[in-house]
Amino acid sequence: MGHGLPDRPSSIWWTRLHAHAPEHAAIQVRLFDLEKEVVKPHVRHPDFQAFTSIKYVGPALVDDLSRGGLAIQNGDAAMLLYEAVAAGRDTLDEA
Image (cartoon, rainbow, N blue to C red; front, side):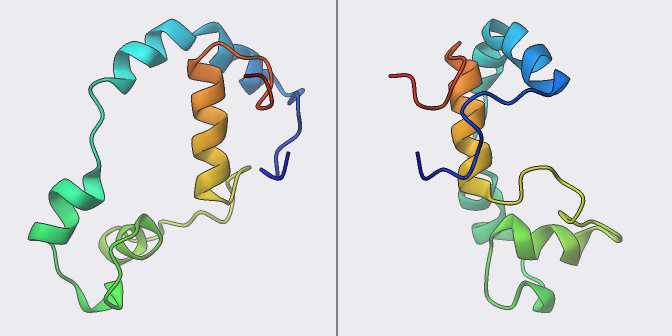
């Protein structure tokens, strides 16, 4: 445990996301680290406050961008949940 998410989310998004795990896996192999590949080497803005994480970059570049209304506020928790669903697991604790 310790990831801050329920073992089995009951909302409809979990069911829908889990149903598309194979498609998500196909997309996952094409993803890259936007911070490492684009932001750090090419983008500068004073509102970044010397940081390059999406928490600083997003709101500095896009008006009215906020994570405030998201169900998952923690990036690590979001990553764990995505990986669990992409792997076809019903819970985050399954090996």
